[in-house]
Structure formats: structure tokens, C-alpha cells
Length: 452
Image (cartoon, rainbow, N blue to C red):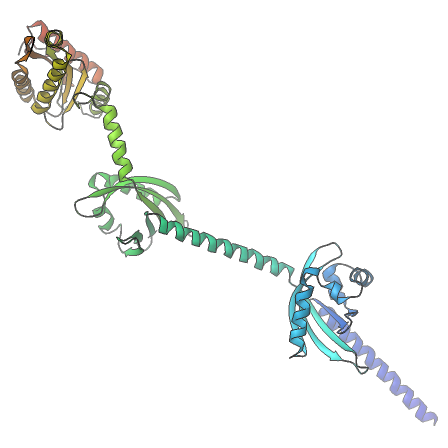
């Protein structure tokens, strides 16, 4: 009997040691698991067990944990999520003995913790139903997901807005791949529908520069070379052909972008048709520059254009500045009236315009005085134009009160012999005009020469 008791006692001790080893291994396993472990009564929701991993998530001890959540799984779940969590558990448990969901929990410091909840339902020998749960902190992942979702939502909204704007406006959109020299062009067709066209060898070939107005090619080339050299934004205005006979003005807003190797890989832009704007600018500029009665350049515009032209000229160029005065014009006004005087000014202006070339600058300086800058000419041609103008203007102006003989006196100076800029050339031509009037009018004089 004694031997039997000793044997049973030894067996009990061995079972206890085995139980202790199993418990230690279980504790090691539980402490090594990511996240935390919880068990709770499936019917009452009373929390039965929590491990160190779960306490670490909430940064507290077991006593504080149980007091904060009052040992209730329902209170463990954030109030706003409780109804959803209950419905998910009830639905899943009808078909499976395990459940999986996610929800929020509010910690001791009022921090919101997102958790994944994986649980298995077991029934004890006494009939108690218990959920054994593995909980993982996914707060950081949720924050990233929410940020990505917000970014995606914003991107979607921006994309949709861009599509609406693109459909609403008539701009031509460009997307240029620098490495492949491929240009994608988006524009509207005659029906208003937008379509894309891809062009290979856009700049290395002839496509772009065949479309641009010849006078604007240098500007476009300069802007393009800058855009492919340095990243940034810019604006350029140019004319581009819509067919072989017509050009439209466009204003292109563009931006160029670098790749990983610090080289420009892409240029995008949006070009707006500004033809009407340019025509209106030209109309306003013309109105501001033109004499209302004759349509010739007014005094200010004539001075500016002459000064600009001379400043860009080489000293070997031969230009002639004509100063023209209408002889006896005061008598026309006094004898025949201002209406006839206005007609006389128009008559003189028309004949000046007909004598000189379209490329010459012709202006009315005020009253009965006119000016012409004849560029790239010769002395023989200048003399011929002066004689022809004298012959054309020489005439009788008649009216109900009688008639008045008119003619014109002309003073001429040459660039750069008589003046190297507008002011000096004007003084020389004005001096020559004075000589012509002193010589009896109806003639021309060249500065520095005694006669014609």
C-alpha cells in the first residue's frame, strides 16, 4: 500500500510539473504573439481574460484595464461601432464557429485604437459559451488607409473637374515626351467632341515648325530650348496655321518637369486661341497711332517708329527723312473755309501715300505738316519721289469764295550722313525744309546741298 501511495504521489507531481511547463510555454507563446489575447463570455459579454500583449496596446495594467472597460466587451467597443459589431458577430456566428471584423476602442487617455478582431467560439464543460479572441492594433495602418483614400478621393475629384473644364473650354492641350519626341495634342473637332492626336518626331521633324508662322519660329524655338533645359513654367504667344491659308494667334501656358536623372522628360501646356484679342489690340493700337482725319500715323507714333527703325539700322544703310509742308494752306482755311481746308489735307495725305512705298513710314505731324521715312533707298530715288510729290500737290483749290493755289515745300536729310538718330536727322530735314520755303516754296531741298 505504501509503495502504491508513493507511486501515485510521484505521478501527481509529474503531472503538476508537466502542467507548469505547459503553462509556461503557453505564457511564452502568448507573450510572443503580435497584438493581444482576450476571452469573454459570449452571452453576458463579461471579459474573462486579457494578456500582457493587449495591456501593452492600451499602455496600462490589468486592474486599470478592467476598471476602464468595467470588464465588459460591449464597453470595450467604441460606442459608435457597437451596433455594427453586434450585427456582424450575430451574422457570422450563424454559419461559422469563428468570426473576423475590425472596430475602434477608446483607451484610458481617450485615444482611439483601431483593432482587428479574430475570435473562435467554444463551449465549456459547464455549458458556458466563450469567445477566445486575438486582437491586433491596426491604428497606424488605418490612418495610412484613410490618408490614401482621402488622396484618391481628391485625385478623383480633381480628375473629374479637369475633365469638365477640358470639355467646357476650347483650349488645345499639349503633352510632350522629350525622350521620345512624341507630342500628344488634344483639341475639339467641329462637333465639339475632344480627341487626342499623337505626333512622332514632333520637334526633330518638321511638324511643329511647319505649323508655326515663319515670323514666330525663332520665338518658339527659343522658348522650347529653354523649356527642355530647365524645369519651370512659362508663357509664349505665337501664330499657328489651322489650314494652309490662315493663321490663328495662341497663348501657350506650359510647364516642364525633370526626371530622376535631373533631365527634362516632359513638357505639358494649354494653348488658348487669342486671335480676337490680338485683333482688338491691333485695332486699339491702330486707333491710338493713327491721325483721325487722314489715317496716317500721328505725330507721336511717327516719332517712335522712326526712332526705333533708325536705332536698329547700320550706319551703312541709306534712309531718307522727308519733312513736307503744304504751301498756302492758311489761305485755304481763311478764304474757302475749314471744310475745304480739311479736304485739302486729305488730298495732300492721299498723294503722299500714293507717291511713296507701302513699306515707308508716312505720318501727319499736325496741321499741314507731314513726314516720311523712306528706308533703304538711294539719292536718285529720293529726288524722283520729291519731284513727283511737288508735281502732284501743285494745284488750284476752288470754292464758292474763289480759289487758292497750293503746293508743297520739302526738306530732306539722309541717315547717317546728316544725322545718326531721329532727333539729329529731324533737325537736319527741318533745316532743309526752311531752305525750300525760303527759296520760294513748291520745291525740295536736301540738307547740305545748295539747290536741287
